[in-house]
Image (cartoon, rainbow over all chains, first blue to last red; front, side, top):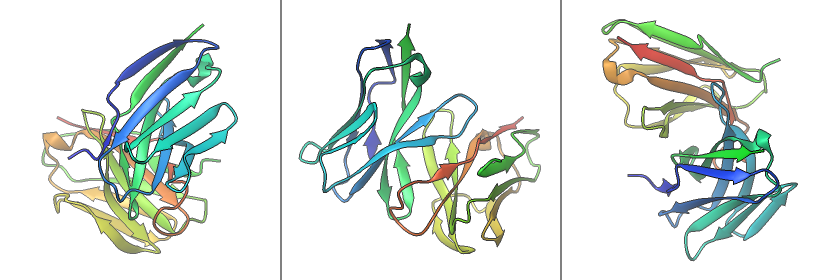
Amino acid sequence: DQQVKQNSPSLSVQEGRISILNCDYTNSMFDYFLWYKKYPAEGPTFLISISSIKDKNEDGRFTVFLNKSAKHLSLHIVPSQPGDSAVYFCAAYSGYALNFGKGTSLLVTP
Amino acid sequence: DTAVSQTPKYLVTQMGNDKSIKCEQNLGHDTMYWYKQDSKKFLKIMFSYNNKELIINETVPNRFSPKSPDKAHLNLHINSLELGDSAVYFCASSQGGPRTDTQYFGPGTRLTVL
């Protein structure tokens, strides 16, 4: 029963362009969302988060948008860089536990 | 100077064996976690300890037993290993209670059961 869904397993973007990664959730009780980035053979690392009282949070090249009515959030990376190539996980808190999506593999090509 | 470390990084073993994975965090965090990433790439919570006390115990076979000797360590012991236990196991830690801003993850332990 996957409560956090990332329906695009992969995304390829040219360097300098915008990368948009999408995430949907089903549990309306979720009120805090996070994006994690993962390189091969490493653990996930925190990227950016957003509380449900906001609809946007920005940190440098990374912006997360939250649409509560649609139960949808997205991560925008502008401009995309080759070093951004990684798997991106969307996650939401349920109590102490993070519920993760399946991840989207982003490839930024030169 | 690793914040969350796990040993071993790779573990290959036979069915039926008992094995342990160790986790240590030097961040001074109160809460530690074990997650499992299966072959379908889903990352799922298994256990969580807060100040050495078990606070999350998801539907995990009782062959899996977490042990927290102190706040900085949360080890995972697995008895009678089965093929389906093959996965990557991630340890994580965070400061404080629910909806903490950031969980810090270890590099993972890839367990292969033959």
